[in-house]
Length: 448
Image 1: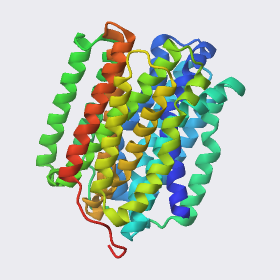
Image 2: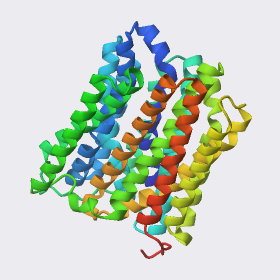
Image 3: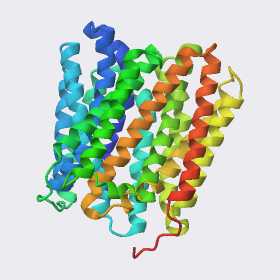
Image 4: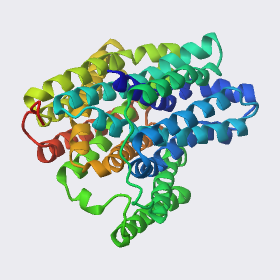
């Protein structure tokens, strides 16, 4: 239990910081006299560095040991959180947030790899992955509620100070209860490929974020997306030629690996697109405060812990495929039900769709995680974890950007909201079809 608690504490901090800042950033901007550009970078800089360096974090973990890199990430993240809390200006805060993103990129790949190493029995590993997934759902959805509570009581700096005791406890637990990881020092880091990944992810997320503000036909958006495609092509070419690739392309030939990563992209796209557009609807159309918005989103949060733990237990009997398929179908039903409620449904009518979406996403996360990690050789556990989490972050950014663009460009706010929910339901259905084709069938046995 101690290794699980240590790993989940680090992962909780990382995902919490993705969403907790959203309700605090207007107050931060006023307090530090930040420009609009500065406010945008306070929010987006963390996500850009986080997603861009995930593959680097995974490669370093495989080469130098996942526990070492995980602990290094916790130290960087905790120290930069303290810097954020005491930032005297917006430019200082932006730099500290970039450092936070780097720490997060070192933590997340190692978190899954450490669980893989610590829990050798398949059934125990599935339960551990279930709790790991629950931390993601709880942290992401509780961020607005916790952020609103902290900002309205003790001030915005506590949004970052809360990470200090969590980080210290995580580091202590990891050093005391998680065994050192194997190293592969003979595997050199492929820096050209790493740079191509960073460029591709940064350009893609930056382009998607700008599309929500500028529109999809803006030259800067099109240029950013075009350069992102070029960077992906450069990465593929480099990996074909490299003697020691960061992500061997033969791994992607595995349907479980590539399909599991695609499923993660799709359900993050749908779920975080729903959370983002629902938050805007609650605050801008219904007049909810930041704290009331967090409470309104609570039905989605309340189901995540229960669903992830349940799926971790059931996978021992049923295997992963039925759980992932059912979770994705339930998510599709939830968002399709929201879209069918009309342009301005009463809030009570939205509770069931949010519960279905939160439950379905968390119910599928455990099985898709197990699928990706099980398809990778132990020597590439960090790379597999990084691939899975990179695609999920890309899905989140795409869902947020598309949701914002639909709200901004549709003839009516309600029409944009319904369109966003309908597209999210289609993404869930696509993920269900992929799960049926790519997730291995069969129950897990204790001796596996």
